[in-house]
Length: 189
Image (cartoon, helix red, strand yellow):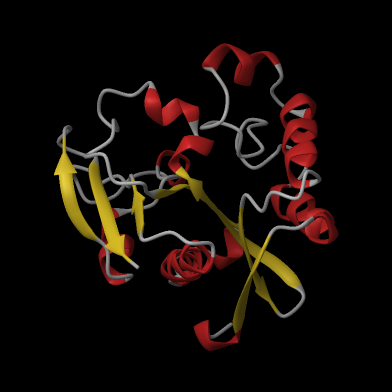
């Protein structure tokens, strides 16, 4: 489907069934249900699968909109987790992804794209939609933590935070790099 026909909308309680359909029975990746950045490693592992699904369900039903869904027609085809950096405590425990400065930022931490919709530029569209969503909610800076594989290619499962080239295409610029393969990229809103 052409990029111009893809629509983007925040995940709300009414759209929960679409999120579940996109993530499938396995919860996208090993039962994560996009809770990787929100929980300690031990919590994430202990409740992999249904426990993580229930936690994300509860989060969505509090009224928080934890990310953006992409649709091809009525079919959910992609996901991008975005929110204020403090929504993702795991970032605070990372030496590589620690804050660049004291500016308040929103963070893009995860993508999931349906297999048949991959490699079609959907991540760039999701990034642009996430930036608009963040701006609408008062953010002045949005940042992400993509990977930049050494050989230029990595299996899909290892690029759930996105690829640096997609962030570049969406207008983000590198502001820090504490690891050879892990830039921190920002976009002013």
